Amino acid sequence: MTVLDVYNLQKEKVSEVELNDDVFSVPIKKHVLHQVVVAQLAGHRSGTAASKNRAAVKGSNAKLWRQKGTGRARVGKASSPTRKGGGVAFGPSPRSYDQKVAKKVRKSALRMALTDKVKCEQLFVIDDFTLPEIKTKGFVEAMNQFEVQKALIVTNEKSENLEKSSKNVPKIKVMRSEGLNVYDILKYDTLFLERMAVDKIQEALGS
Image 1 (tube, rainbow, N blue to C red):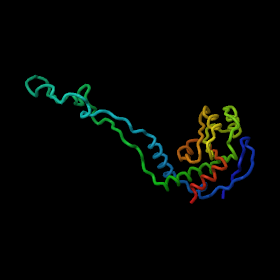
Image 2 (tube, helix red, strand yellow):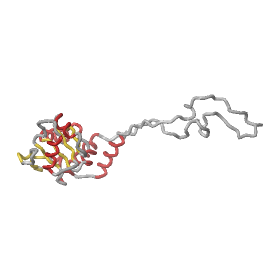
Image 3 (cartoon, rainbow, N blue to C red):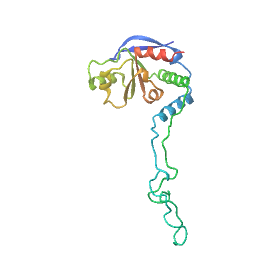
Image 4 (cartoon, rainbow, N blue to C red):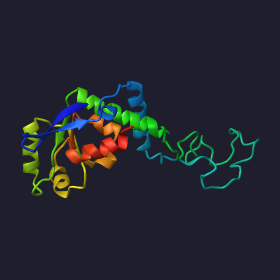
């Protein structure tokens, strides 16, 4: 098993934690990570872009003028895409961008992303990330102890003081362990896990 130090917010070692190799030490397959990240980002697309085709444009269905004898080009309905105010030809319509990814593949990708953080020494386990008060300065001072600027913080439970203190700090994101995902793990340079969150993650992803 992999053993990591557990720190407090002053970056003082307080204990150690054993990481399950089935979760934090697995073979990394880039194509699996890519598949899951692409599917996750596609799911965030709204797919609400829409335009009116010629059937949806309100107007008379009458032919604008007779076919022959006027000396002008023949013409059809006013809703024709070739006319001003007419419908749009081949325009966008509402659609879903969701991509289905098997649950086992998503779990596997999470293990790979966590393994990558361990191998790159970009994972810190914090004994308790509870702040005594809502104060941005106090949060920034804690981050400066670890010399990080772009970090994802994963807590065991909702922490209002931490979430509000970090809200105005750029390149910092706080989430609970239930929301852990591949894209955010890979996006942020450093991953902080609360000690209790580690147990919850290992229970959810362990084989």
